[in-house]
Image (tube, rainbow, N blue to C red):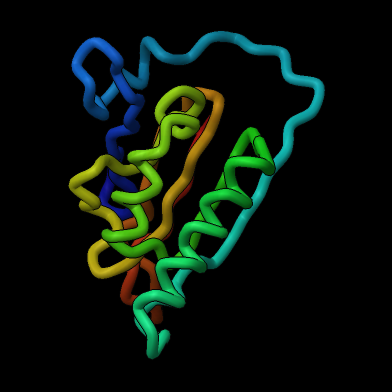
Length: 142
């Protein structure tokens, strides 16, 4: 794209391949008329600060339940760790309903980062250089 922005893959679960696959972003877009949609955002980093691994695991399960039952059209998660990403992407409701901004490899969440889940296909763009910040910012176009 240019020196400040780069394109990143978007993923959708394939029942045929039983895996998260990168989708062709150009062919995924269709003109959809949407009257309203819901957005949920959540900062999920807590496991690195918990003294008890059991307490942290219980919080992760509760958060995953909250996300599931919100049935939000777009979910933006901040400070996602690799282990949280893996647990979330194993959920059937995520596999069946959402496009996601990272795969099980977690290339954008190492050691932690942002994750976008959307019921609508989207083009993922990342801002590579941000003054005074040492991390990537994810931008998207629905």
